[in-house]
Each structure stands twice: as structure tokens, then as C-alpha cells.
Length: 257
Image (cartoon, rainbow, N blue to C red; front, side):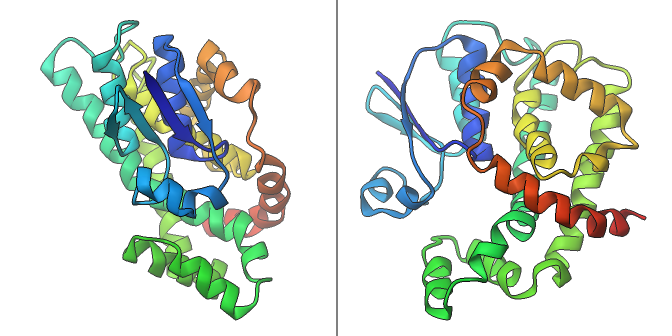
């Protein structure tokens, strides 16, 4: 039995869903809400209170990069890693890069889209929200986002880091159809949710100097897995992301200029 815990709107959850769709694997879906991540019931499944969580025949796998690698190795279907060791190493470089950029995309998301609701809370509610985050570094970053918003150094550093990611993607894609070569791999799956979130937040202008990345994203959107994961079940927070992103984009563009 294969089970996936996720919530619609989570970048890492989307990563796992795309991998399962690409492999053509049936699974039991547990679609949670943000609030349910913090419940004692879910923390018994994943003490980090994050998604995704994969359970296969009673064995639990955490961390989205580990999960999509496990999915590729454990199940039949199209191979999502190259057959040669060097190609696999290149794939893992992109998986590592996606993990490193996760906090950047999280900072962008929370500063642009989630912060307006958070700052409307009472001080007690804000503190309860922050203390509900198990990881100390993430708690500290969330506090800075709430208190400092666009003025915080986290935001500027995140934009700079995401632009560096896009630049490196451009360099890889100028000579290859996909991030790790001529075949679609876990590299493309790992990065897709980050680019999707950039667009959800109306920050597609970040890609203006990276035409190869824009072409890659169009190919991603044409894949059946994209329709399966986002066409049929769009992000319920998408409208909020879009509305707040349109307000924030002029300031973000000024940072680029």
C-alpha cells in the first residue's frame, strides 16, 4: 500500500505528486490543510509537521528529495534518473539546489502573500503561530518575516538567490532540453514547484532575462503530469498569491533594477 500526505499548495508536496504522476503510480492520497499539519495526529506521522510524507507498506519516508528518489527506485515506469553515475550526480546537484532554494521561495511566499493575514492577528496568535513551527531556524525566519516584511534582509537575499538559481538554470538549458541533459529527470521535477510558485506570485518577470527557462517551463506545462497535478487540482491559495503578488511586484522589480 502506498500513501502520500500532502496539501494542495505545498511546493514540496507538489514535487512528490509530479514524481508519482510521471511514474504512473496509484496511491492513497491524504490531502491536508495547513492547520492539520500542526495537529498531534499528523505529528505522530511526521514530527516535523511538514509535507510530503510517503508511507509504503508501513515504512515512512520523509523529505521530498528523498521521497522522489525513492519513488523512482522503488517502482516501475519511466526512469527519472540517468543510467550513468555522472548523470545521477548531476541530478543530485539539482535536488540539492532545490532544497537550498526552498527557504528562499518560502520567504518570497510568506512575505508577499501570507504576511498580510499574519500581521492582522493578535500578538498572542502570532506567537502561537511561530511556536507551532518545530524547526528553530524556521521559527526565527518566520518571526523576521512577520516583523520586518519587505524591509528584512531575508527578502533581499531570497530574491538574489532565486535569480542566481534562474541564471544557473539558463546556463544548463541553453545546450540541453532538460536540466540534467536531453531527458526529463528528477532535476526537472524538483525545480518545477519553485518556478510554479514564482508565477503564482505574479513574479514571472524574474524570468525576463532567462528565455531558455521560460521555454523549459512551457514544456513542463505541456506534460501530462502537470495537468494531472495542477490542472485538475489547482492551488486553492492561488488567488491569494496572485492578488498579493500583483501588489508586491513593483517593489520586487525595483530590487532587480
